[in-house]
Amino acid sequence: MKVKVLISVVIVLLGLAAGAYFFRPHNFHGTVIQSPDPAYNFTLTGAKGQVSLSDFRGKLVLLYFGYTFCPDICPATLANVGQALRLLGDKAGDVQVIMVSLDPGRDTPAKLAEYVAHFHPSFLGVTGAQEEIDKVASLYGIFYQKTAGSANTDYLIDHTATLLVVDREGYLKLVFPFGVSAEEIADDLKYMLKQ
Image (cartoon, rainbow, N blue to C red; front, side, top):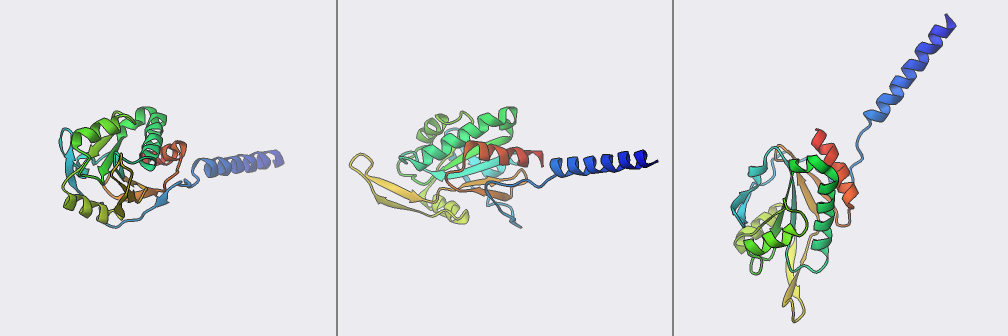
């Protein structure tokens, strides 16, 4: 009798331990956003025509605001995101990365397409009129301003360097700070893709 009770207690304890391990809450590497409203649906121009955020409903969308002349932060971030997609393997098809140019004067749709393809073939680059970019950036909390550059660059653009994640239903759910690793991005995306 005592053996049966002991075995039952051990089984219950093992079940609780397994449940605690497999169903523990995910520790996000980015900041979780609980937005009550869908993310702002913009339409901008890519190399193959108009691109709207709503075109990708059903996928996770990573939004990045940057520019092709960026000397450091943009290429570092996009390289990490490209590596994160490679770490996702087959699940990478459920994620769309969109880079919104903060430099519409120099970043044409063709130039953006060429630039983002260096990091991953699925990335999209979009641009538009300055007023459109100002509105989209503002609604997503992105600050940017032109600053003096070198003779080669003419000017640079200081900008917020976060990576935003819009979930499959179109809600802003996660914000990654600059410097998050490819492994950390992939870890959070894997979890979100299971939801």
